[in-house]
Image (tube, rainbow, N blue to C red; front, top):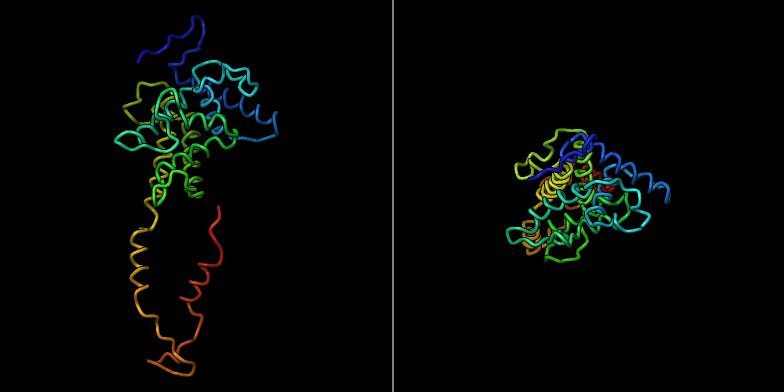
Length: 261
């Protein structure tokens, strides 16, 4: 892959990781300031830089929209392009057509959703697309409601990867296929890869739904358990407490309140 040459007498060199780190920092800061000026939002750097890169990838920076007016110059869309590349590899190739995932270079659905969305929800929008593609529902529904906990896990994984790679190793993706690409592209690729790994881990950790349905069906075919009338003793049952004990306490405690994040 040919790399652009630095401008004469300057350090502006998109082939250099150090230049990219500064460019991405400037981009994130610009979008954070823009969000605060517009409505007082305090947005994270990871959301802000992905939002700006998605807009640049969509070439919306050329518009007169004030929202994008102060984006720094440079190929900022490379971060989003690397992100989309990893998703395309996971959900489009090998006969798998993902939902909301990029399928052409000029019609990037995920990037468009990120750029149009609120700055502080950029990664959540991308995470929703990933979860919907990886887990299209039990009957393959296209527009099913994704698991909100799984969306949160995917978003957090991608945000962490962005922040870890912000000043981390140049080879953030650790993948030979993108080893010769610039820092932003590799960082975007690695960010999407973190999201893919998070959603796969979340799905793998679920109990086997088919097995659960089979067990329920089998139990449902059995006669109802016999209820012992009051006062009747069977096999020493009368000598045991009617309620309480460790097992009952654990059951009661487990249903006390849903898990929260």
